[in-house]
Image: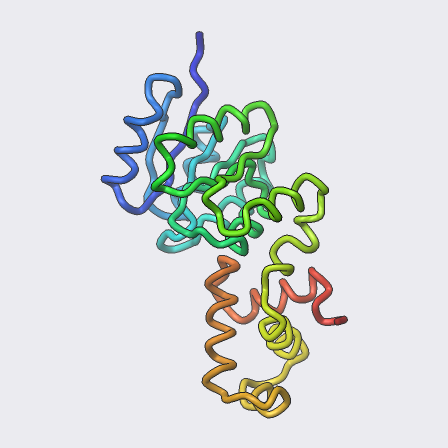
Length: 215
């Protein structure tokens, strides 16, 4: 019987090799890559059935890499295997096209299940995720694309994002919200980190796409 073909992406080689050992012999691990750009290239060349990827990787984060991969081939099943227990990361992962979200410390008990679920077209979310029950409910109701990631931003983060999208400077936002410029920078950094982005321009595009500029 042919084993499902899996491509691993993790910038820690020891971790990736451990995952390989965990998955074989049920799955065929056809390659290991260590950054997002190599993930895009290898996905096109090796054509795996499943990608198991970390979110935080050099050159290009896993979420953006998967988003680009699925623009070319949306049949590839994607599981994110990460250290991030936050719903905002999970929401971004599913928005990019993932079918599974597993924390690294629960991989021995959950990763195989997540892959098997993905191959059947079913979603899997680790119960170890903060706010997992509410998030799974949002996925079930099909609301995660519009409200999944944004719903888990704080009210202040949404205000900062909206003002950034409207072209306000950090100093102007601080004045409008009666907070310090340092606090604005903190919220900006947290949103970029939590949503798997790289620049303020990414935040602006996100705000426009999700209607935050109209709030």
